[in-house]
Length: 166
Length: 403
Image (tube, rainbow over all chains, first blue to last red; front, side):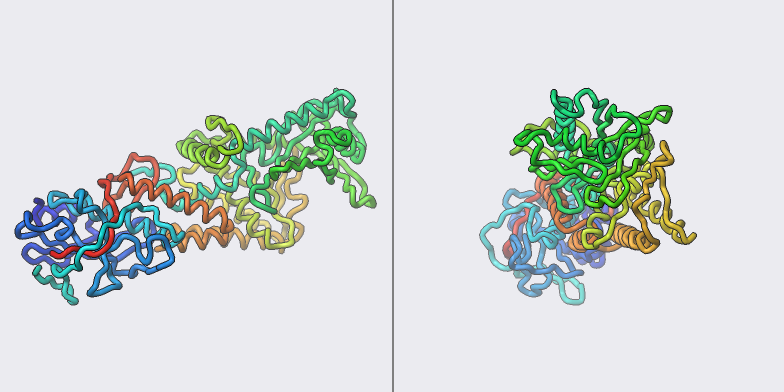
């Protein structure tokens, strides 16, 4: 399992535009801008390493990516609308979490660096989202599993501080 | 770090627009077959031009590989051919045009009988697939630079107007253009690869296409010229005005030719150059004036601009093109913003199709884990030689599980 220090070091090296803005114990929060092509997006990435990895599912411990500005647009009539490939955020519906990989395979594990997976996947998702807004068609691929329970833990407080998992 | 051709999405969209408005390579081949067939036909026994054809050769956009869909409608292409006749020098303009018309039209029921129209300087053959072939009769002038010829003006609908001859050397200018815009860079290779791929998709159901046949390969200057002509066609389709002639734009591009790796750079370079020439003439209170460098009597601006207002209209069009491309390249724009802005310039149908093509490219690369990523952010779309790959991933959805 990659440590928080390793994740932070890799992010500093590859994405200095996504600085670490909060860190507490096993939790980190990066916030900055990504520009997959022309348009710039304010992005936040929250990550918490599990205390006991063996008892958590990958889906449950994955890094959480939110697009902060501009807020993602909803278009119910577009292919895969209202927004393709997200986890709904029951607490704050305007800021869903991006659903970037298949946790059942799993395409991401605790041994992967966020800077080499989650962030380029976010860029991919954003560029495909831009085309989706332009054409109403989703060409970024993906699939839809059965829905699981809503998230209960590991969330940010409104002031950007970090709150421990349940 | 040097970018590969079409790494930049704006470049890629412009390329896809150019591919969609140009004469596809397979139709270029078809046009060649057709004009050779016409040449053979007018030499048939019984033709009034039997043994009076020296050669047929392409002129204008067809000859320099810059043919795009006609102003009137997408899918229609105007092909310009010179029919070099061995008629006596000083032949009457009306007679020359009439004899070529008769030779092509033939007898009732023959191949071209219901497809031809006698026009002011040429005979036009209208093909069912939308291709129009303008065949201009010409007679060689001796003691002049190679292929300098007389062409003929006689308006069949204006019989009060006196017919006359004009001197031209279309072939000479083509040689100058080709020399100036020759491009052996990776741009031409990458453009050819994409143009052929599109051509196969479009033509596969109707025609047997050899994808390896050039003229798919074009310089950045010529592709920029195609886009400038498309912008002109789009703008003037809403105006009842004569538009800047393609030969004038070709002369400007030839004079300022400079191979570029970026198509956006090439379009901006040539748009600024043409604008500069027009503004310079306008500031002097004059109309822009360009002649064929191989035949100074062959004036490329004899019918446009007629007034300073004409040239100012096109200056305004170029200003809009330059400011839009500059803004799109520099600014913070979504793909939707880009599509809308480019549609205003090049027309919605090819721009939407181009954006869809780039979307498919991005989508496929995303699904295959083939997107390449710059340090600090940014996706590259071109040749896979730079940037970091990221692993394949599958977009999912639904709700997060409990933690």
